[in-house]
Image 1 (cartoon, rainbow, N blue to C red):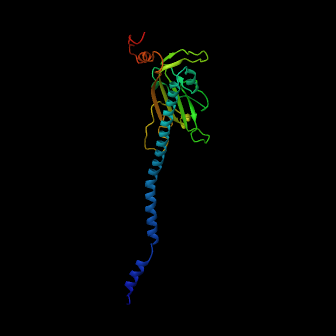
Image 2 (spheres, rainbow, N blue to C red; image 1 turned 180 degrees about the vertical axis):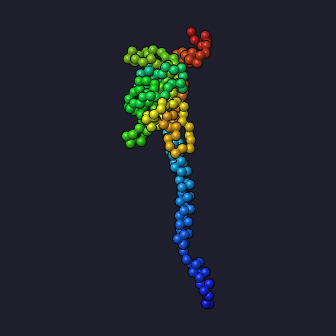
Image 3 (tube, rainbow, N blue to C red; image 1 turned 45 degrees about the horizontal axis):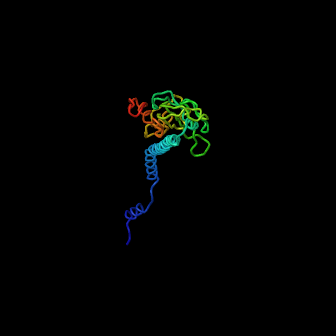
Length: 229
């Protein structure tokens, strides 16, 4: 079957590939699409990293509180043992009002003030990943029964722990104490000045004489005369 000129021209056009103009148009469409979704991808990755660090910070904060609880549960004159794990007494009525850290020390050093934070390298690369501020209120204390122990033993006290991103050490503004909010961000967000995690709790040594009376006193209640002399 013979085709006329118009039919041959139409078949040749159908069998031909993309023209140069069509290729350019396709490239422009792809470029515009990538330019539109690229920022969203950057935001998504940065936010996921922030969320992962926050989860790590919460676990670290809870681990610090658990460490203090274990020391208290062991009993005895544990005042010196609490000091050895950098639990510093703060001059505050409640842990939540203690000021943010303004000094930073090595992870192996023992804090001497409540506003010191220890550097922590969690991945072993030699660079700090977090800063941990651990402190307690005075609470109710009793003198040590063992002459070899120098620090008094707190029976009831509030404890606080704040975990900051390591970059907070280089902050150009004073650090804050309120938790950083999980936001959709392409940068550090509030991690550069606010803690990733801030936990507060109350610890009581209940295996001592007059522990209940001490707790009543600490909470501001009037001890029951039937139990407390």
